[in-house]
Image 1 (cartoon, rainbow, N blue to C red):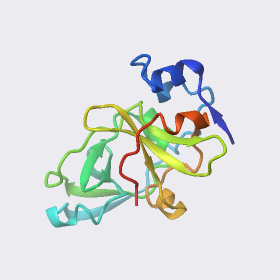
Image 2: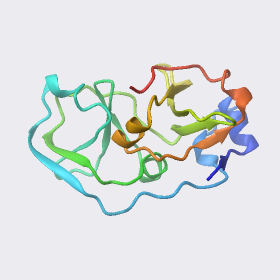
Image 3: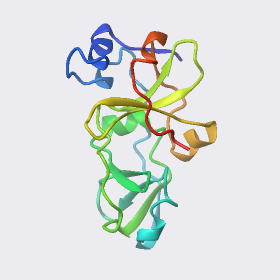
Image 4: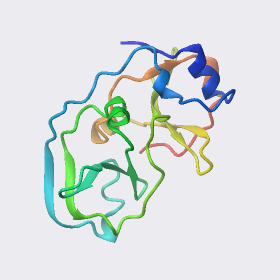
Length: 172
């Protein structure tokens, strides 16, 4: 299924305004299943484990907040709509007694999501750099789409925008 962005979204993406980039998609993504299948690990998230869990969604036992472990940091997913737009479902979320030992990264918010460019098979994660500006991160393989539980479908942007959005670290 091909997704399109509105002209307002394209203007926002190239910096004409600070509007939410992905909240204005013209075709909504399929929502993740509301049922959550989690795996509870009866231990704390240890400091030396943080990179081993890259790509996994994690949470603390008894708490609703879900994080994505990305580059050794936990990234809070700010709301259900953002989660459902980026991830296939809630299956496979790992539960830990505590996540306090893993550093916090930038939140994953409504301006982030999966994008693709016209006539291009590569899928990117639209992310933000340290200053909050958009950047694209290439998802290097289909197996990583599965590991991260990302949707296989992405919002399609015009090809000319590919060079307008800076590259960030690839998701490997």
